[in-house]
Amino acid sequence: MKHLVEELISSGYLKTPDIIAAFQKIDRKDFVPDEYKDRAYVDAPLPIGFGQTISQSLTVAFMLELLRPKEGDKIMEAGSGSGWQTALLARIVGEKGRVFAIEIIPELEKMGRRNVSKYDFVKSGIVEFHCFNAIGGLPEKAPFDGIIAAASAEEIPEEWKKQLKEGGRLVMPIKDKIFAIEKKKGGGFETESYPGFAFVPFVSK
Image (cartoon, rainbow, N blue to C red; front, side):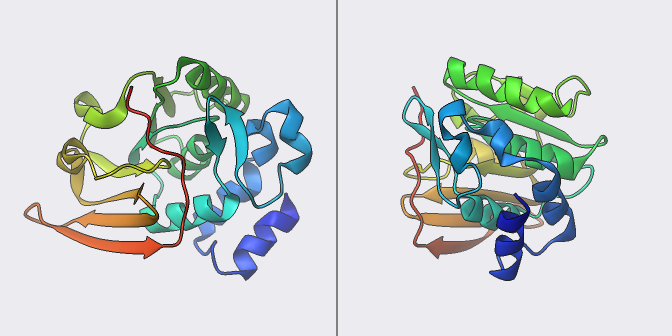
């Protein structure tokens, strides 16, 4: 794990101290199915079942750097999968923050909850899991400092934009590009996009 984190730092994908610390403390191996644990530190996506993957480490680092989470933030994560990114976010936001993890596939929601519980983030209340279609967001918990999704959709859900705080950031893939959107004062949006990525499709039913 140490070698993987050092590679991500030296290649410029990991930059922020809090995000680096999370990668150092949250072991990717704890979120990989048993048959792939020997490949946990390979910088590649790995199957977690049901046509889904645990994302490539490089991609997770890149997206978290775009999201810019910090201590005390309230984050919505759409498509929590095996829970690795969920746990990384929980480590970053800390005891005063909250991560609302949404996963539509019941078996993966259970897997993610079980894996994240290894770090006591669920029992402490930092992470709250939900099992339903994330397309409508989580209005009862909004507004959010950050919203992140690791599956590719055709467009950014309008409800997510509404549920973002002013100054908040939304990071998600649209087709083969990662989009980073910041909500400006007054409700406008500033958008950046980064091509050259591949993701599993967003599951909405």
